[in-house]
Image (cartoon, rainbow, N blue to C red; front, top):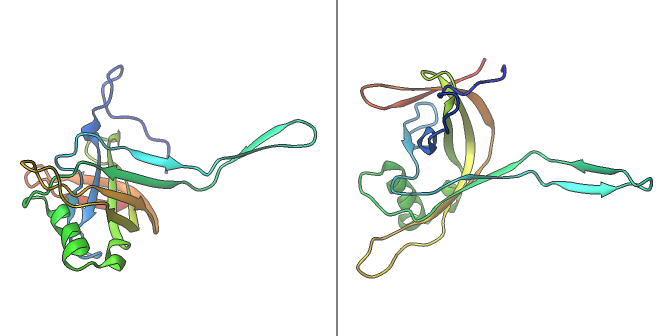
Length: 175
């Protein structure tokens, strides 16, 4: 895949709303991409390159990196009956306590700011672990279920498109 450019206005910063993670809330072969992070005000993808720096006997310093481990935390993450992704995760975690299911989820990251506006860059991870860290909250407040994602499995890059009427996301793998 050739280098991409940002499809935003030159000189303007890029809105955070243009980087969205989606959970597949349907079957792998016919995915329904539901956005993660509804009601979350701050979330970033953390990247760990397992950096290691050594100095040889001649005094030269060398640094190596490994394939990154990427994680993302959504906190607070208030429960909302209209949030399909959160409902699916609550069922897996608290109704079923399906730890294997939580460790094998299909997630798509769409970089709406990269590539073209109609077909932005996207990356699909076939086997992500999503773990809720708690369930509850302050009296008089809302029930919150903070989650952490470790992106894993096969990484497939491509593009995404968003239906202008329904908002449905479609992923197309690069050839």
